[in-house]
Amino acid sequence: MSLFTHRHDVLILGSGAAGLSLALRLPESLSVAVVSKRELVEGSTLYAQGGISAVLDARDSIESHVQDTLKAGAGLCERDVVRLVVERGPENIRWLLGQGVEFTRDSEQAAAGGYHLTREGGHSHRRVVHAADATGRAVATTLEAQVRARPNLQLYEQHIAVDLITSARQRPGSARQRCLGAYILNLGSGQVETFLARFVVLATGGANKVYLYTSNPDVSTGDGIAMAWRAGCRVANMEFMQFHPTCLYHPEARSFLISEALRGEGARLLLPDGDRFMPRFDPRAELAPRDIVARAIDHEMKRIGAPCVYLDISHRSADFILEHFPTIQARCLEFGIDITREPIPVVPAAHYTCGGVVVDAHARTDLPGLYASGETAYTGLHGANRMASNSLLECLVYSELAAQDIERQIGDIPEPAEVAPWDESRVTEPDEEVVVTHNWEELRRFMWDYVGIVRTTKRLRRAKRRVDLLAQEIIEYYSNFRVSNDLIELRNLVEVADLIIQSALRRRESRGLHYTLDFPNKDRTQRAPTLLIPDSYAPRSRS
Image (cartoon, rainbow, N blue to C red; front, side, top):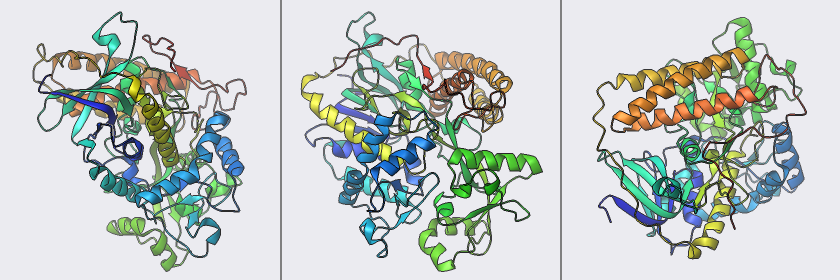
């Protein structure tokens, strides 16, 4: 075995809520590798503020949560999937409590077991359990501590996957197709290493760095979606990119989200002159689903030429604000904004990838041996628009389902045989890295301008021409030079951008997060997911 070959029972790519919860749910008898592009908890989970939706209040119901999710998804949710996830919500919250996550308590909410529940857009009840306004940090750091204590879990930080290893590519013409592992770049040594495993799980998060403005950290570059597509897996609903309505607008602020929980606790959206505008767009006003709120803000900013709008919760008491939103208050104070006294300048930003790699009810992709969970996956839960705080819930549920399926099959799957090592014999050190930098900036700019909150067919076609040119440049560059973190991420983002544009061009209606001026109305005949099928796809039977 090569010095740079690693063998494990399970290889998990990604270390957010999806990846870490899966690792903890696998039997301790298994050898498990967890690969993280940066530090173990650096990812979207860490920055999630609002909370996790689950039916914990006796006055709430599973059926109500199901109906709210279906309504937010604008007719494209898969009903069976919604019920599956919602029904497993309470037990997954209990699992987090068992791991040591400390959610905010409130003795007045006895019907919810003493935990404070907030309400967010699209929800008809208070059902979002949270840890003040830093739920993601509480979940991520708690799971990190548990993972670091498990001797069967080997952690590979500062490693980024380059591509999946499949039997089809190792042995062309092989009748038995399977995912065997991944080639992974060690960012410390610069060496591409081979990781082999009986099962591989994609938990790499979303692709929102494809846009110029995003609430996501730098690691959200669509790696798992792009790798799965290249390996022959279908993707679905990539046109539905969610823009969070409220990110802090300040020249020195970078990707700081203002939680929807503020609106759940009564915050109002205002124009620069102080006028409230959301009631003109939806009877639910600030508690309308995110697609409606984001479009309303975008419309008002363009209508009056304003650089931002304002979110005001200063009518609530200072004590209430400091108790429930300490992180937001502290961050805003760094920029001279006291949210207990004045409104917060906000703008929409790319936030969540509702589409992704198609998986079944066990989190299995089209390629045997390969699973996907969290924002990387398309499960059918979100439809055309994700309802607030359903994302962490989906991570937990599908990682549980994947762990159960892997445990059931592990005894029947042999270790992969040796594979060809990564070949760098015909490449050299890059001589013009400005190509990567320039293409990165160009991609994110035209995706924001042409494939953003409001679209047209003309804009989408313009974007398609540009992404095709970029793809050719990246293929040439990738073929001739050694890989780097920036090149790998750019290659994946260009791939994902093309999938988003193709999907948006196919949906000739406005629904949920996809709004086009050429087809402004919903078309009842277009109620199927937008399915993209790679040339290498072939239906496969699985047990």
